[in-house]
Image (cartoon, rainbow, N blue to C red; front, side):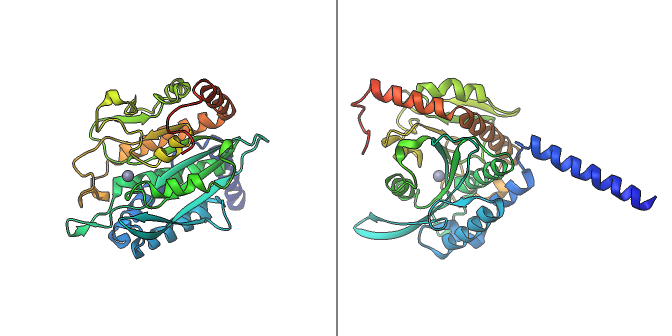
Length: 324
Ligand SMILES: [Zn+2]
């Protein structure tokens, strides 16, 4: 009887796992918060580009890419590049991988989140929990869900370096993308998903790519999150137009449609107090789930998004900033 009982429990457990896998599409809260906590720990020393702290962050993210089952986009995940700043050349490293889609479409999408931060500021470690350990943790959660429930299209995932010094990682990746840029229909960029006393989650980009507006609305938001489309045009004011505020900027400049999810500036922005302890955990998990649902919808309509992109380009062939 004992053995039969155990067998019944095992069968039941297997059935539960299979059901959970088919359903999935739910953020693993503990795993996501663990990634956020580890990436924003003092041990990472603020993840300044070119520092040992950034190297430790890369080692952690690489391990998570492998564990999740993301395939390397280059010879391995590392995309080395250098950039010029203040009269000197600096080296930096993006981490890029992808998950294979189930369809034979050659259209692809990329989810990006920068892992670098300021290193030290005000004489202290700036841990950058919201900016942007939160975005990297959300990206990893989405990737894990896409491995469990494969997308229709190849979806790339990039932990970008040197964002804080001028969106350098995104610039480098756009100019050295692993497949023809023409095939890239959408960039979903995540930067600051962890701190929000209210419920607002801005989604920017549809001003430039109106065919995304209805799709972002239809993807909607989970309970506790209020999605606000905007922050992407001059009418939002000098600090309210985020068109070039984060890594989606270089994608946009190359004519790639983008949606950027990230909270507004707040009291801990670029301060030593942007630590794991101040993160609004429920908001972060809700925002991550909201983005996961949206990325799932974008994947299911990615070929139509690409067609809409091409139609928009044909209408505005001289759009300033294209192809730079
Ligand atoms: Zn940031």
